[in-house]
Amino acid sequence: MVLKAGNLKPIPNTVDTLKSGSPEMVVNGIVTTMFATTAVIEQAVKLGANFIIAHEPTFFNHVDNKEMVPNNPVVKQKAELLARHNIAVWRCHDYIHSIKPDVVGYGFLKKTNWLQYYKPTDKYTITLPDATLQQMVQHLKQTLNIPHLRVVGDLNQQCRRVTLIPGAAGGLMQMTAAVADQPDVLVVGEVSEWETAEYFRDGNLQGRKMALIVLGHSYSEEPGMEYFVEWLQPKLPGIKITHIASGEPFKWV
Image 1: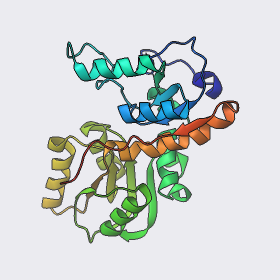
Image 2: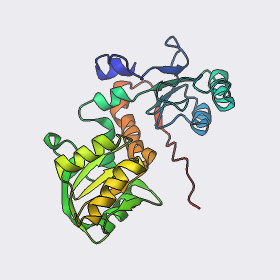
Image 3: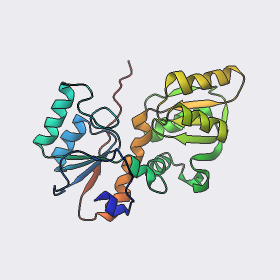
């Protein structure tokens, strides 16, 4: 359905497959989200929506292998919940990133009010008006509704050139972007602490003005799944599409 609506080409060996339900199901309503958590599933039931489009895995590993940990009671209960309410879950990860412009990145820029600074030829390195790292942190907290951020660098550093890499791209991509794009600040979803975080720490200890902002995986890509409703709804006018934010799993104590 979504592939036809977006005129998207098949991607070999994609993880974007049905995690529950069947292709023959009649869709009554659609929910977009980052993670098809138990809470999201229960809210979808209340809405009368039986098709969840999730950006990330449903069963806690990249290929949604339910047997990765045999006899896993959490996996079993979640699968039973989906089956009981006859809900299909489709992961939309590879395809949503293949759309031009990338729906996740575009949604992030829209949510942060940074679309005006975006040029498709620059991918996701943008130039903003002068601001300190502290001011940038406050802007991201406010626009993305994030209670806490993790930062490496001098909060008084001036930041204009910003490279955005939502999600969990990994240390290689993050550090490559830091070297190639030369941003004042790299804004990411999540990091391997022993890779990217330590790289930025040592860079600062060497006297380099380089900053890192870690948003959290869900916070960085949820705006894309929210914008996906706006992208998809005109293509499926007869079906109600709702975004439900799955939030992040952590509490700050």
